[in-house]
Length: 143
Image (cartoon, rainbow, N blue to C red; front, side, top):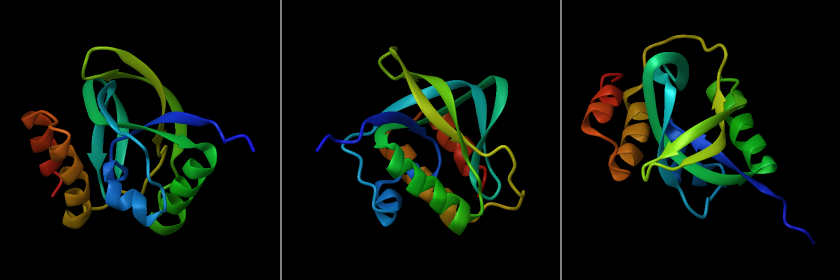
């Protein structure tokens, strides 16, 4: 039996958390830190990206099958209420190399105040990955 191919995906919200991914039965082998230029992050109430000519978003790249991605983002739509669509992006890894990846962005989300527990699920892995202090402060500002 041939294994289903995997594609790189850039996670920037609660899906950076291995414990959140495990709840949806997705356990990536490795997650690598990187930054995505040309976007800014919002959390209102879910994490999402908006184009920004001055922005940069930090996150983690993992490899996933299309079935795993369908399950993850089906969960995001059915349970969390956000319909995220895949967009191709070029992520700069922290060693300065670049890697193409899929990045899921919601074209439309109902805006509301962020839940502090949700922000904590984003902040935890961001701290573990040692994202810059200014970026951690940006995430903290959504509480």
